[in-house]
Image 1 (cartoon, rainbow, N blue to C red):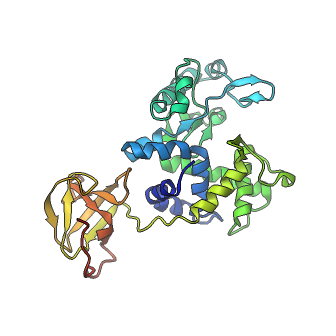
Image 2: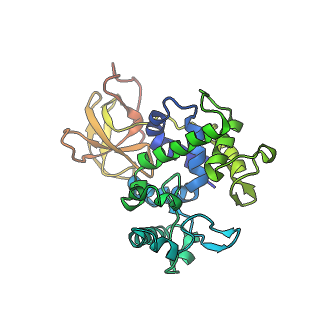
Image 3: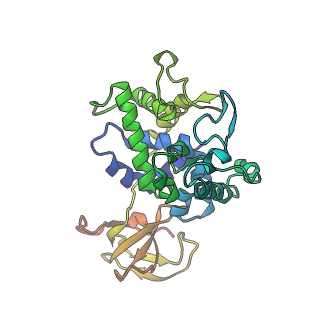
Length: 315
């Protein structure tokens, strides 16, 4: 189960992208975080501690290896089995991708190691928000081109499915939702339907709770998490009065042979995937990496008027 620290990391990494995509919808950041926690939180929460690049963390968010086990048991949607996938146009290529996805994630997530040892097993869910392989029939390019490995693409499909949930519930004209109403939409996202009599006890059952109950719990937790001051890529200025050390890695344990004076302008080219309080920077505007700095002592260049006084870089 993702913790508050995991959620803070997720918000710091993806807040800008999510909030930009939510314009004109009744959803908010915490609602999307709740979906991400329930769908692949057990994966990205573990991967973020492995010092992997952020794009690799996103690419490894795959899962669901359950096959058809009979009527009402196991997977019921296409493809029920390896053979069902292979028999479909481009199915051999898709199986190779889905199989490799499982083999790639298994070393990091122990729950997948047994499945990875079975050559017939493969992943059915792809992307941070887990688009199911049943959609391969109608949108093969999304899977064959591995667009699920890009956060923007998996987020776009998530929002599309959530909008479908709004329509099914008659919420399409809403400009906002209560947390309970969003949990209802999320249940439709998971199951395709909502039964008012069952309230939150609907959707996939795991660890003693239904999908709707987990969504509601993650949403409540996310609302308590402040992501802090986030930095996106772009142009910034140093605002540490005594200057800001340029380091060889994301932490004070890395050596520094240069201090950037207050007022120095630079480009942030990447937020560290393990610790978003550190960013990679380009000093010459040539697209090349020059080092890491502590993000709290940067301000957007277009908004900067004067450096803050009495601010010291951490030792």
